[in-house]
Image (cartoon, rainbow, N blue to C red; front, side):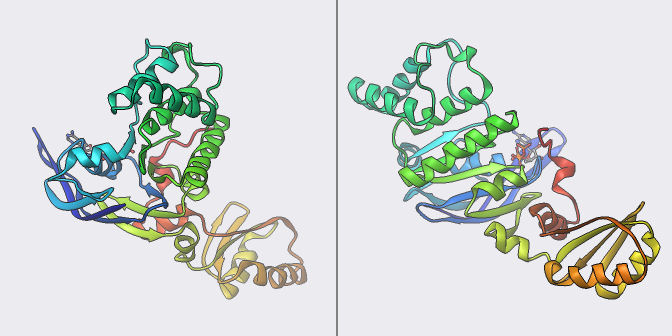
Length: 316
Ligand SMILES: Nc1ncnc2c1ncn2[C@@H]1O[C@H](COP(=O)(O)OP(=O)(O)OP(=O)(O)O)[C@@H](O)[C@H]1O
């Protein structure tokens, strides 16, 4: 569905060239749900805008939905949907009318367009909102309308740029359900950008991690997490110094913060009983013990030396 080689974009600015994307290779097969994860400014939107023909690459080649990005942009556009960060719907138009107009724009007849709008209104939980003015919708309803707009012409491939940014936790969870549904029921290939680790983890079959214009890792969420060796054991105890000594004997990367000691072990669940026994035998009282599987944030930290959370605004 997407095959890009060495795709790059440099912007000319008054302060000199900005290399937003420095030559990325991307392969997405039909039916995949792929996440493009990276901090603010990593180059996600620029890559998406190139793949959707909105801006030209300064180097590289790509085929998208079976057509060459550079020589057949109209064919590409016909076969893809794109939901940008600001959505495509005008604020003053009624919801139903906006969808029908979008369908007409893509060459559907009035009857086809109305039928399709009706189906999508149902699928995306917008029932009863046909006559509502777009500007009065809630954030979650608006994002679902944006996605419906992107699907009016039945694209085989849908690009979503930061689909849940700005939504409250409940609307995000609801949106994820709809995205999963589109993928499972319609078989739409989805390529979405996000800087939310939980979103990439919860939704995507496969993740490409981009940092400073380069892809730094690729794999399933689980495979990426396995790249960070070992689980994190967190022990809150009455004697952090002696706990840290013990941690140093059985694990690595020991860190002490107040009464909390953190360390890594190969297999947390296996090691935990021994840790508890030894602490008990040493007369150290524990107030809390936790074993954490590596998160995607640990992966990002291992790969880049920086936490993704530093850059991302995670909604409460
Ligand atoms: N039109 C432009 N002119 C100059 N620089 C740009 C332009 N568009 C993007 N950039 C720069 O290119 C880099 C990548 O930006 P891009 O928007 O692709 O990142 P992103 O990963 O999508 O970030 P965000 O999560 O904030 O949307 C940034 O340094 C950005 O400032």
